[in-house]
Length: 76
Image 1 (cartoon, rainbow, N blue to C red):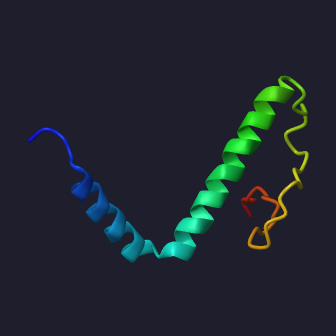
Image 2 (cartoon, rainbow, N blue to C red):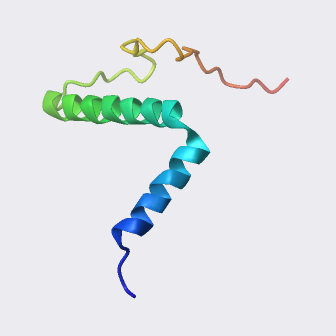
């Protein structure tokens, strides 16, 4: 009674697919893969990160990404 059998995992998988849909899961998987790849590339580069925190990073080629610039709220 301590472990989950293969049938439990199959039921969980079916429920997840029904809730999210295969297209959404595919997008999540590809986004996760790109994030892991970016993390690995960042770890390879070591200390070559820019020191300027205001420098914009424009490496994303995803059509769903919106590039914005944050501004501080002024108290007037």
